[in-house]
Length: 102
Image (cartoon, rainbow, N blue to C red; front, side, top):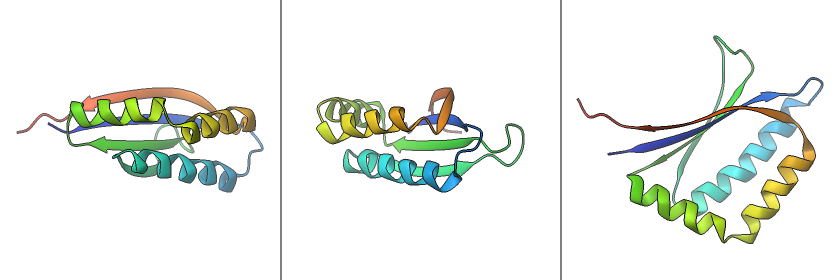
C-alpha cells in the first residue's frame, strides 16, 4: 500500500516564486536521499498559487525509515533552519494518505 505525504504552503506577499522553488528543490534532494519519490506542484484551481511538495513511499515502513533517517541528518536540520529563516511561505496544511487499491 503506497503512502503519500503532502506539504502545502502559501507564498508570502512579495516573495519571488523562484526563491520558493529553489528551497523546494533543496528539500526534494533530501527526501530523495532518504527514499522518497518527490513531485512539486503549483495549485491552479481553488487555492491558486499555493505550492505542494508531495512525497510518495512504497509503504508505511519505507516512510517511517525515511523519517527516522531524516531526523538524524544534519543536512536536513540545516535546510529546515534555512527555510524557516527565509520566511518565503506560510504553512497551510500537511496531509498523509494511504492508497486504497480498487
